[in-house]
Image (cartoon, rainbow, N blue to C red; front, top):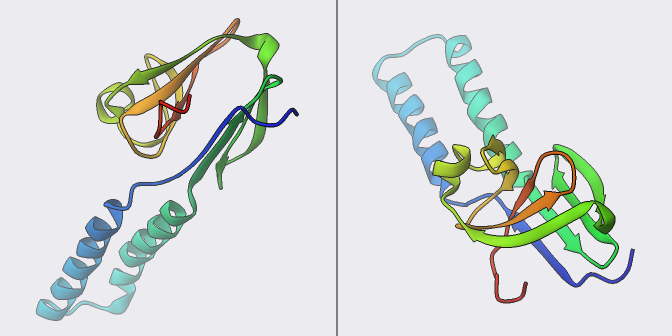
Length: 143
């Protein structure tokens, strides 16, 4: 692959962590006010901890070069490559991830498959055949 013309790396939004911390705090207070066997609290706490860990390690990386687009969405999707010969167009679009795709992460919407982690701007990649791809982009001026 030629040297990248444009590359970015994104992590999930950090405002999610305080919300998950508040959920854990509420679970702890409810346990204090109305004691229950620890077995009943183990599953909900484990789920929240697993979600926090997954969100912490989610990272979108992509590189655009003359050869095409190389991307990965850790830890869910290993590195993939879309050759430039298969790309019809690439545009930067202002969007609301919540309205267009129903949130952040690996999503599907009317614009195609989206890898969104933060922000309100995406790269909309339309291939000659198949579904469109969308990647979070933080700085459209560089693009």
